[in-house]
Image (tube, rainbow, N blue to C red):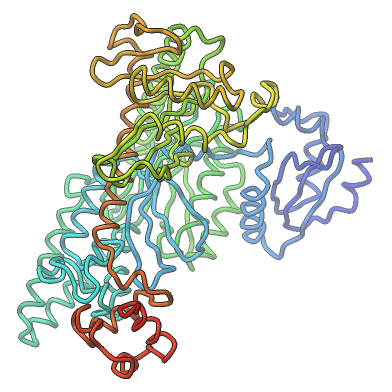
Length: 611
């Protein structure tokens, strides 16, 4: 049957999809000649890896999509793999270990920030990375925000005037619209050139601007640009890489692997300087080293601007489809891109350097994984758990004498923070007000809200859920633990759900129904893991509490008027200069403000004159 499906395949470039008897996609591939490539999987003389041999045994149906060029086949294959995530394809792991720099081009005034999670909601937003050297990345971003005028706050500090950052030249007055979106984009485009590795091009551009400003006797502007040039020249000053030709832009990629992990490093070298060190992860069993390198390069270059593609790529091993990747990169860049496996001299030494760095990262990854495993095993033994706790949830309460009371829920998966699963809660209990706090009732409320959808479910049903915890840790002592146990009992979730508390003062662990804490040592791995969960829950709760206090302190009486948004509040304040004058204004005076019609003016007037 498969032979009949292979016969009509054309010997043209395209993408093929292999499915099993259930119709699930097993593998997605590309080729210059579809028929030859697909037929090669089923030839008896082929020495396939055990993984590919297992895949071939499960193939029941083959589909194909013809493309005009090999480059189109590469792009289509990458998109299909990203969408379907076939089991037998090389899939890179997004473990959020390395951070990205995000520039939100989808916004009128783009933000620049560091993040460990790529969000694909807005196609125009651009992510640079993932960067291995987090310290250098943060240092670079701090310098950028110091020498280039950028928006410094996600929300305006004042409604009718810019903050101090504008006065000292750190911000161009975005909150008050004192700079056009076009001019602001020009500033951000210069910063983007730094993360694209185009610092030499940027320096030339800034030097021309400085000379022009000086010739026009605009010495203040010239001095500002001069400071920007000096700051950029200081970036990566000690990152010099010795190569025979410093004028060629290069990327060098290599990996290190064991039976479990594969760590990949990609060095970006521009004008003889190492401008970026990117890191990726893959499962060792997902493919050969050559296939993993090919997949990393394809996925990386699909997400960059053509101007960022280097003229030369040095690789550790020959790629399975070098010609397809090189042709596609050349078509994107507009000129030839060479992919080379260096054999001697400085280029081979550079690949060995990249491989050595990948090896260091592999050792670090294995060491962290081993430490997490030891901590989980120790915790399971300490709490008499049947298996190590895969999902641990921690809870804490934060308030100031009952005001702005909030709670946090943090999640650790296999001993590692899973920040995408964090949650925060505003305490709704009407008895908790300023001057009257009740942590016991607050924790009971939060746990009740968290687990209300699991009420009265059987233990078998609960164990099959991905977001059901193996262990709950409460920040507090016996009182906090008892209040949580009571609410869980009413929902028939206890004693099936394992709950403990960790007291701050002496790092004591309390179990339900026990008057004395467990006998533990503060430095044993399981206790240290619980402390990390507790500290993270505390940090997350305090951060949310501060946000709520700040939001409340900035609250204006105008916010309570229905239909009066932020922009119209600005127009009102610009016209009347204070809320007192707005309160005294007549209906006719209110309607003189641009954007304030009769209906809204009536709302404003009635708000200040309820009688």
